[in-house]
Length: 165
Image (cartoon, rainbow, N blue to C red):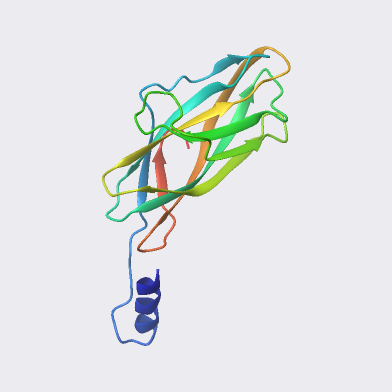
């Protein structure tokens, strides 16, 4: 971050050419075991999404947030949503949750903010999204509405593409 700031200052003084860095990119895809919409009820947590972020840039990208939109026949208000790392893409969380948040409205959007998950150039990171227990039985779908990532060198927001986003 300091190098980019120094170069920007030098460019503003006309001492070096201005920076024209391209924003880093994340190609978002569904993981190999993505379950999609689920029937839910009074039973325990259900995995809804397996999402892979592929770093298409030449710098490390720190992924720090996933935002999700709920839809379906069940009221999502107060349903807990959790994000996990799925390093081996087996559909099972690897370790504890990165973040947990509750929907505040039916068919609402929830943002799961977490510590940076570093994705190196040409590599990928896979995340699982799971929801907790509902009070009624029905069908629920979660879709990824946004992903936040930042380039470690340029400090620019990563541009996510793919999926429905």
